[in-house]
Picture (tube, each protein chain N blue to C red):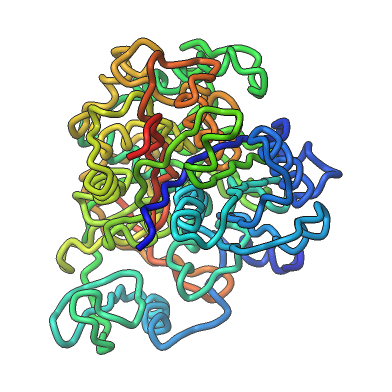
Length: 390
Length: 149
């Protein structure tokens, strides 16, 4: 029997990030190809080494990449999860392919473009109603933000969380984004700006929503024994779970979750799986990269992943605990709220940078990074990156 | 999807129903046209579920029937949608998207809208009553108004 093969992440590449619609005339495939080449280069590898592809949320074409980039051998191509929440799972699936010996060098790639006709902020609205969706669309549940507004309103009502807490989430991340050269913001935000911003869907205002941006990020995973010979310190996939409580159902697409789940990110079962399988605990995590399409998602995940009790995340953030010198630095790259929205893949890239020790906002001695996909539909996904093999 | 179709989807008070009707959804909309609120209930185990899917999530049987409820409800959560995510909605905002719990269906959650009141008078936990709004396209939409605005 072969010895256990461990996977490690060895390369990160990205395009520039631009406001939605501003990446044309490049195509989504072209952005993806640029990110793949940049990630291979970062890894000290070439297209001759690359033999696996993992996508999520956006359908990319392996055949086109093979044609355009002259990739000689394909051994694996798959899609992870069911939506943008599979960002972390796309790396977990790459690691599984490597560990199973199916492929040797696998890229997880996200390329996203939001021209007006394909704007994610009105993602539900562009689909004609079906018998499965008409009970939501008829009443005007037309965008993920509407769902998060309903979830946040109930959560705030039950736990006394306020818009001040949401502001603290946004402010913390906008501050992190200030040092990031690729950030689409050139400054932070003031309390006055936040509280005078227009409301989009109460209790959420403009700044509680992610930016909408175009760009691509790719990450290369290979076997740990091969990683040792490559330029960067290997980043090991020391835990992963792609899971969820069945009662979450379609989550933000239907909002019929039971009361005990409604005011969560729907990730408690996922977190339990992640910690149980990895043998790690919340106290082992040095930095967390939480998918933040909306500011309340950060609070809900702080609780689901075991860093705060129920309803306590607002005070946790307001107390400065998620800042760089806090108990748990969160979204140190600025996240979707403070840098750019590449569907969770900037969080994956930042988790890798933190473990390499090369992050712009580096957490000192970071050994374990948690990266999550977004609370949305089933299943959710998360990975733990570590500086040592498990 | 053509522009015409896209406009149709968003034209009435809210988007239209699916073009395709199924035996699992049709009774709900037929009852609404008669200004009756009905919800699916499993004939075998008595569990309620919404929206109608044809299966009982508690016992897996495909033996659901529609039972009429009074339309009394409590407000579980709501949002005032102020921004039109698509231009076709520009004249529809603000509207109130709500999750209500049906009082005589085991507090079954249902997505709907709050109407017939001022925005400032909406609060979680308040008592609601269903109202039926007949749209120009022939669809009747069950919505809710506060009992004591």
